[in-house]
Length: 188
Image (cartoon, rainbow, N blue to C red; front, side, top):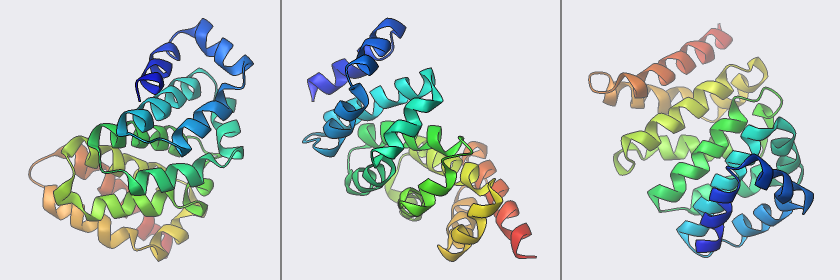
């Protein structure tokens, strides 16, 4: 766990990111995330990947080519630690705003897992609900993704989130409303 957290810290420095990539750091992060034995290890590996993804889009694409979206879906689904979920969802959001990766998030189960998290809204802190809502809204912007999301029941999940938080938190309700509007406009 501590080693993964250290990698996350190291990945923030541009020179260190370059060294990590020169030494096949993406494969290492994939393996660490795949074998994460503790929530700290999952959080550290996902956090390091977030920093590498911010540095260059092609790092996210390489991670996806390694099977990163399937791995992200599995680890997120199995995760019960809110700190680790925060980093995993940050990584998913980074991919969701990348137009070339949105469909991959649907195909490999990340959107399904995110909708499942939103369905269990009473168990999640608002920060994680905000991130989950932002992921779904970002993917819903892709017209090719919308029909898949409708089949997954995204509208019902988003309406429930919107209804529950309508008076309390604009950050949570704004993204579901935008996604609902996009999804409904596709059906008409």
